[in-house]
Image 1 (tube, rainbow, N blue to C red):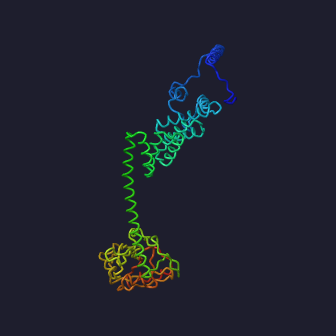
Image 2 (tube, rainbow, N blue to C red):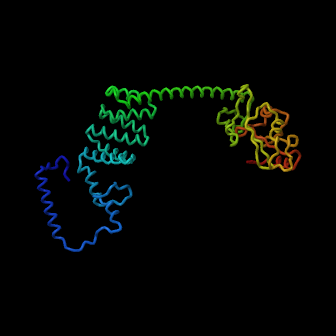
Image 3 (cartoon, rainbow, N blue to C red):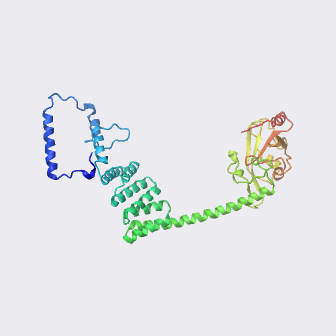
Length: 397
């Protein structure tokens, strides 16, 4: 096929003469056809469906996967064939598609169409500015604000006085909290049109939002500073008491992190160890009390380190355990143990000691961010089985 540069420029008279010749040839061809009854029409029960598929009558563009009429394919080829269209014509054809999709709120398809138009690299800056601005609008409605801002700014590159693109860019900058950019764009709009109501309103809204964000950022920074100070004081208290953790390597003191202190037991996860808010010197611990006989556990979310184990037992058994039918679990009728998993040994707790004293013992390790104790009835088969089983790994729910 000839290149565009060598194509013949037809006059109106030549075009009319050619059309008349084609009409005559078509009439001659029709007259020469065999006369027979027409039996290839659309079925009566599907004529509306068939009509909707025909390129001359279809009301919507075929979607991916749809069966396409051969004539439609031919028309599409004519419309998008680079040998039949200049770069600008191709760009405008794709732009027309994009505008159609925008009208019907199919914004992703609009982005695709405008992108194809931009790919033509049309040398008309006004056309390119419109294409980038239209794609910016499609991205904006999809809430792709970063892409929308980039396209609007690209449109301004091609056409610096493009008011619609500058307004779209200002809206995107606001959504992205680029407050200084938004301010600059709004002020540029008002320099051209002092009565630009939307720009005035956005400029004020942008200013108020910036003040709010700055204020919130200052609050967050101050709170983060306070939280860091609290954690440093908590870490100092833990190190001062030489608290040991299961998750720390043997014979090596690892740094105490916030992650290390998060309880792994679901009922305790919102109650990590912390310093008492009133005296700011007493540690408050989450604790789990496991009953091997029943395969269940009790959880105490906030136990002060000054409490004795006897105090804990009195609280635990203020009401009978639901599964303790013999009422054997009483503060004076149980023994409490903790396990040194690293050494594979269990240690009996002196119930007169405070939690701080128990935690400071050489064999005690904080387990999963909490204090973990085992409660069994004194001098019973349950206690003997527990002590025997501690030589093997155990898991209690």
